[in-house]
Image (cartoon, rainbow, N blue to C red; front, side, top):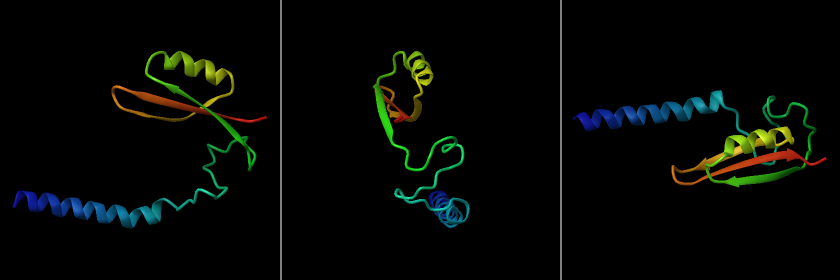
Length: 93
């Protein structure tokens, strides 16, 4: 009975999330030109980007500070406890 209640609550939460995400988060397509205002500050539509990825945990704080000074911004970070990849982007002038 306890497992049934947990499964029912999970299904209810999932259903509520599916319904409210349509209301709260508008759909965006990969080929659209709309970006959140914070991401597009000072960037012209159609801007071309160059990317740089750093492999590993060691020294990423120092590296990212220097990259920031050089005009790079962090675009993504992903990995596991054993391996990490940090990716940065900057507009091509």
